[in-house]
Length: 378
Picture: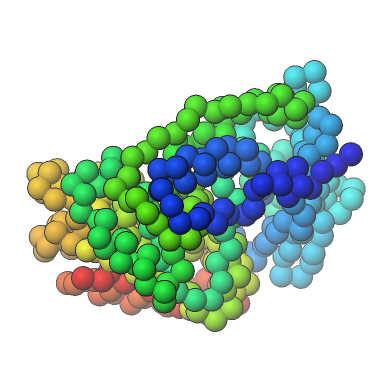
């Protein structure tokens, strides 16, 4: 018998609304709950033409299998896609069926993969199935739904990052401001779900992952969602119709906050919304690390980091700030949005910071005309 995920995991929801109380206890409980999450997720890796892959069911668990159904859309057609993962004699394999007849099948050798070739070449070419990437997720937070309004996202309020205890007061001021809907993202190890044995899970053998412990200056917090977000990688459902603003606090700006910015904007790109999106970085409430993502040069001199890792202080050096903003801006303008060029006709990108202000029109091959701002607050 198939059990919907929300029944099988009755105590879990898309996110966990924490009760005001001791933060360390709430973190521990949230980690334990998230460790029991599971789902199948699929998407197009590159959107050079309009293509959407949307779940139309929860992931369900049966005896020795899990399954999820999706809707696949192009600019002219819509079809179905069903993903089933089976475990037989300790061996895992998947079967994907499009339009109830076209199949893709293979052994499961890793948790994230491009699907194997579909047995109908014409169908595969029409729907560009070679660009479909799927994930078999365990111990990973479910997507958080973003709607119209103003959000405050505090990223990784942990002592390992804020080692000088610079952010507590500013963050708590945001929590107490009712004009924002606040979220807290909790750090954990990347690919934690790989510690879950799929065969054991499908055969109802319980698993326990190593406990996670990240100390924090925060103690009492209001009733807001906690989301486990390894290196800022948690998912969002974009259900904004008019306008979304997000103010980021926490750390690190050149790694986890950068990743989470991409997760927000990716959910926007993989939607049909025409909303205006503005992301604020409060430089007096954000910290950074010496090196950002390798290859993009989101870096700061270590001698300056050792004095203060507060973003506002790091950007006080005009030469450092110009180099940093140039690279950060260039990534989104020249790399990120190009991956989704089939999902928009144009993007008006505004990047605003002290000493660095750029507005660009990025052209695509889709239909939406979008407006996105990346703005630094002093």
